[in-house]
Image 1 (tube, one colour):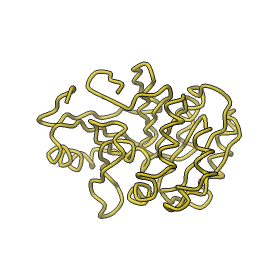
Image 2: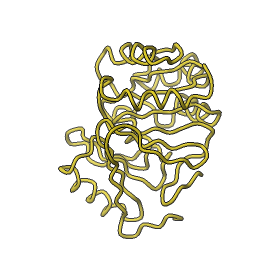
Image 3: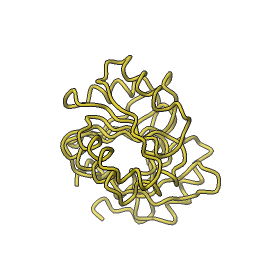
Image 4: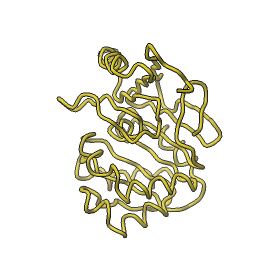
Length: 227
């Protein structure tokens, strides 16, 4: 487990990038940094498992190509069956950058948790891939996510940031929801990540804020960085 200050995250040779939200026209600074963090020219992969707009994947590939990224794929992972498809698993394992698009956080978690596809993402990250979670993807990477989906509330994530609660699309109006989550899990810390801002975590304990804005960090009442 990698640690920098109070924050811990999954050990690997790649980068974890949690994006609060936004559009291609407003996240370009983040996307450039993500491409620069790639270790080589291996393909990029967009995972639409959170739903989102039908053209999100193709617009992602076009946007990243305009920034100089290698070519890549939109993987047709939209249910647990496709998350076990050997072709999808192979492409994830071989990817240099894996991008989880925004949408329905619960759908993303239900589709990928405990599947060969998520194991492949972990293997790619261990080998040096950049893993980007936009909105729902940011929530999924943390221990828990404060979902902006109506009625979804607090959702259990994959725990790649085992002592953190992620709150994407963060704004002052969401402060009460983040503090309520910390009362429920007082040993964790909260990360309020606004739109057009990303938390970037590197393999050598690098911690950066990418984009335009600030990330809010709140500690639970029983937070222990070593716990």
